Length: 513
Image 1 (spheres, rainbow, N blue to C red):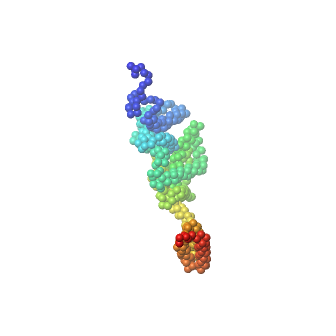
Image 2 (cartoon, rainbow, N blue to C red):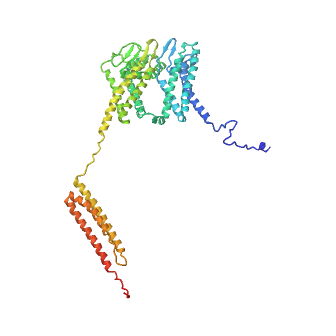
Image 3 (cartoon, rainbow, N blue to C red):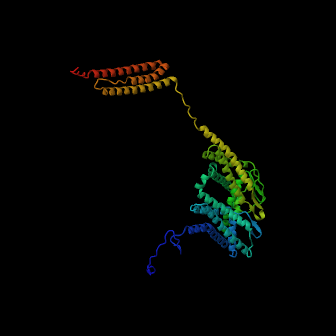
């Protein structure tokens, strides 16, 4: 009865299992992990859908259009961001802007990198990457259903489901993997070979340098053809039209940069019947997009092959950087690995750039040719530069100084100094012995004289003197003087001992005798 009326309940022990609800104040690790996975799966996709919805609604209202196909337009835009070809009124639009895709990948990679700091096991990392891919795939499935339903009201065709899932999964898988690798790079780096881990940073800045060179080339082409760009913008027919063409040109600007990189490496970029290369151009009709005014209208040739110097210079700097990071043969392997990394990234960008462009035909940048040429330029000149840099580094290192052997005269002087040290030690020993001899005089007048030890010490000191006499007469004379001084010291010790013995009183004779 007391236990029923008592308000305080006994707390269970550590080994017992408690039943009932878990306290809301202390969430379990499983709940935190689930919350993190849901955030990674749907937060980036949800923000993208909200932004797309706002842009679509504003665009439709600005164009004085009704909102009948709003949901279909939102779903189609989600697919277009992930490079899924869109079919509108039986016209396929396969060339899609790269800028929204790059922004989406950056957001996903950053989100995964932030969440990966809490994942300390491989299973947790695998769950994180799986959630980053599963969330967008779920949104893609919903968008495909919405597009299929909206096709009955607007001229919109449902794209290939397998292609849609493939592009979405590939983009988010790459972004999530990059984010996890960046977050756990300090753990991954020691497990890689030295040349492989050292090639990551050079490969990244090499790719950035190529894209920067392509951007400069596009900017110069736009400035040269500014009159053509102005005429294309004037076709907008008002502020809203000009603004739309400007935004659309900015979205497609990275596509043009990738094409410029392909041209600088020696490949060709084709837009329908128009083909551009450093060795010659083929003219034709282009879509009325202002940014395409940068495409040269002439036949090319002349000084255009000078653009091939760009990958050569970047390759030289790549090899120099790799040789300074990792010396020896590993520097060459590092340069080749960085070139392979850069060529792979450029090839993937070229693959995403191409596609069908309706009545104008196909926009094509041969991705495998661009990747191979990029790798070839960078690997060739990077290896040569790394080899030369390594050779110069070894040449600049000073050679070790040879060991100089002392001449015989200098060796004799060294032996003399050692003999003097030995003589000084012997003199100190003899003084000590003389003091001990004075103390050891007994009452009968007997004296203990250390003659034998002094003779042995004299013989030991004479041995280095004899060796020195054979080498230099001057050393022998100095040694003889040292020996005479030592003999005089011994004589003085003996005389002092005899005087002390004579000073003792003579023994008293017995009267009985």
